[in-house]
Length: 101
Picture 1 (cartoon, one colour):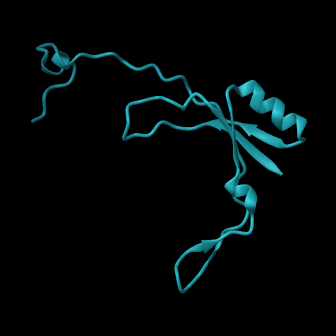
Picture 2: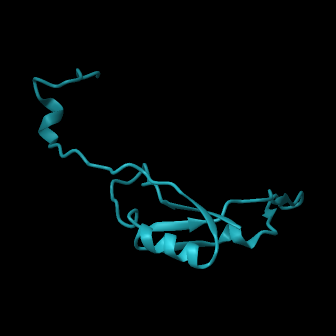
C-alpha cells in the first residue's frame, strides 16, 4: 500500500483559504474503473481510492502513516503570501502594467 501526503490546492474560483491548511493522506488509483456501456458510469474495485484521511498537521499525518506501516511520499507546496492591494491601485498613474482596455 502506498500513500501520498499533501495539502489541497486552493480553488481558483474562490479567494478564501479556509480548510487548505489541512494535510490529507490519499491513496493513488491502481486500476482504472470499468465503464458501463448502458449508463456510462464507471465502477471501481479498489475502495482505497475513495478514502482520504485529513489531519491538522504534517507531523500527525506522517506519524499515522508510520504507525500503520504505510509507505508514503510527502508533497509540500510553497507558502502562499497574498499581496494586499486596494481598488484604487487599479487606476494608479505609476502602474507597472498598462491598462489594456
